[in-house]
Amino acid sequence: MLLNHISTRNVRGDVFGGVTAAVVALPMALAFGVASGAGAAAGLWGAVIIGLVASLFGGTPTLISEPTGPMTVVFTAVILSFTSQIPDKGTALAMAFTVVVLAGVFQILFGFFRLGRYITMMPYTVISGFMSGIGVILVILQLAPFLGQSSPSGGVIGTLNSLPELISGVQPLELALAVITLLILWFTPEQFKRFCPPQLLALVVGTVLSLTLFGDVELRRIPEFTAEFPRFIPPTFSGDQIRLMVVNGAVLGMLGCIDALLTSVVADSLTRTEHDSNKELIGQGLGNVISGLFGGLPGAGATMGTVVNIQAGGRSALSGIVRALILMLVILLAAPLASQIPLAVLAGIALKVGFDIIDWSFLQRAHHLSIKAACITYGVIALTVLVDLIWAVFIGVFVANVLTIERMTALQARGVKTISTTDDDVELPENQQALLDQAAGRLLLFQLTGPMIFGVAKTISREHNAIEDCEAVLFDLTEVSHLGVTASLALENAIKEAVEVGRSVYLVVMNGSTRNRLEKLKLLELLPEHHVSDDREEILRRAVGQLPVLQEV
Image 1 (cartoon, rainbow, N blue to C red):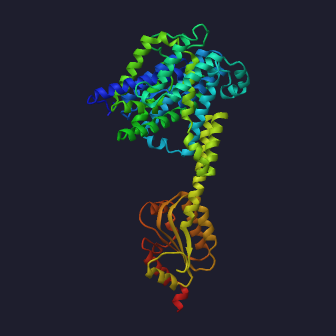
Image 2: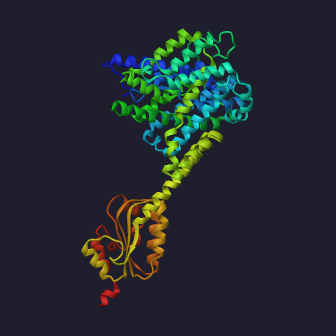
Image 3: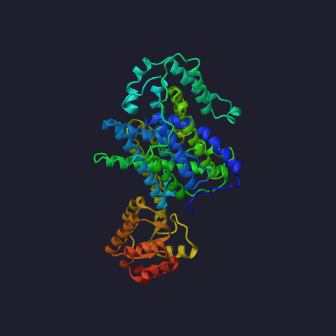
């Protein structure tokens, strides 16, 4: 089905859910738009476009899509990268929005090739470290406006280097507004949150205070923007920046996929439904493509907006459509009022989002669970904040996978055994035990069990090299569930070496993927046909019967 699940059976709940989600989205969209450097209008129109398109074409009925903290942080880095290299700010912004389009294209491709279920298959230590690092970046980038000053150039490092100057030049009244905003966000009573989201309350209270108590003071406020539909921004490329644009688009698209699909899982757990991952990625991609073409921020599934929507009664994509239309009306009818909102208030809202993104729960327990897990998590945080988002994920995933392979190899190596008599560590039926004992150590049973990945190849070689006195070897693969290419080649070398030294070689393998792998490698051609069977007892009897020592007896 082309469209998302849009139902008229729950109109009242969907409308109420959409209205509530719109109320929550308004201050967040303003804060993210200003924080990114693209402007408040970019945040608002991003919330409208992505929310509407993803609701129409996505695969999660209750998902609310809009600019999110992680997506804003990455997009901010993209803008800073281009504005630092390209003098014309208009061209730099156009290239940044082209990256948003590319991110959407990547998401559509991920969905089209049905990669949805693989997107979130990353170690939690890497996801936690990456998201926490993004939260730290968002907090650092808001320090300057929180203290009542313009953000210094140089992004995170520039802000950290400028901290002494920022602290010495603090604007007390703007700092007070930011602190009041944080206090409202943190200490609004739970029973009051049901009637008014704390973000909207903080926005209204902070703006009213700035116009009344601080009315005589010159405060930094949102720059004015016109109440009109966004203009089309054609994709803009630069020959020197194409590679960087494509890489940033891929990273932004991947992050959007992770953000959206993790939120879809949350929606499933609340509504007891199941989303369509691949369809959701296509919907998210279309939303980001259109948002980028019209100067909107990139976005993804937003956990806060989705939970609020569901709790307020939203059950179909109609709620997301209602939310987008309400936001659009607010932009067109109330844009002049936005210019009264102090930047310090938006900085307080964005700062709180940054704190919430940090995975405090896991960070407090990571070192208790595993020192290696803690090192990966904290290492990814440090790389994300101080080096580069792309390298942080790449190195984190690489190290985590290497450690996982090491653990899996150690476990699977236990499934490689060489057995000469039943006194060894082996469980065989009595008749097969008797046949093995009858061989009196002249027949060696080389047994493999479980999945044999490339890490086990070294164990296979080591165990085979330890073989000394025997006249025949039986390689038993009946319990092998998966035989990797590297392990297959290690087995081939072991068989070849046994044949070269004059040993009789037998093989027990069941019909299926393992035998198919051996046939494709032409490994079975190394052995006589009657030395290969899928019956261990039969091949044992044949091997024992052909031992020269037993024939003399």
